[in-house]
Amino acid sequence: MSDADFHLLVECSHCGLRQECGPVQITKIMGASRLLKGERWSYDALRELAIASAGRLRCPECGELGCRIEEISEEANWLEAKRCSNCGEVIEAERLEFFPNALLCVPCQQREETGELLSEEQEYCPNCGSLMKLRSVSRGMLSRYAMVCTGNPRCR
Image (cartoon, rainbow, N blue to C red):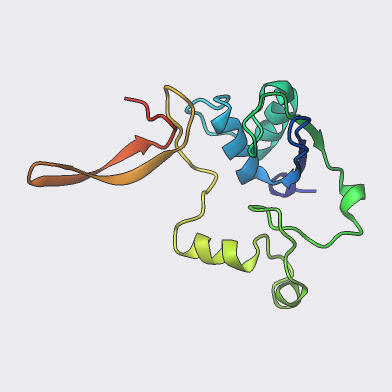
């Protein structure tokens, strides 16, 4: 199993969520839990950090602390279809016939080609750990682009 193919099972005892998450989803969950601070993490380090900080993660569904995380072994997935490394959905068999090394499902591939998909090289807010996004900022007659925090509430 390569580093980019890891999937973790996230379980919440509060709302009953059971979700298989790829690297991008784990990054979102850890950012929302304020556990990632302005550094770029390798997939291997991200997987280890997520497993180590399982009790401090917020559930993506209900927002409660205490999600349980376990690593899904390669042996457990050998009977299952190949999953998208971004959203965790099953990649269609027709797509895998033409592109056997495809890592993304069709919708995620389209978002990646248009630049909407989060990549490994995201910037995180140094204050709260949320993702930063490039946005147009206008002041008076001047407009420019700036990186702004996507956290809720926004950092200042």
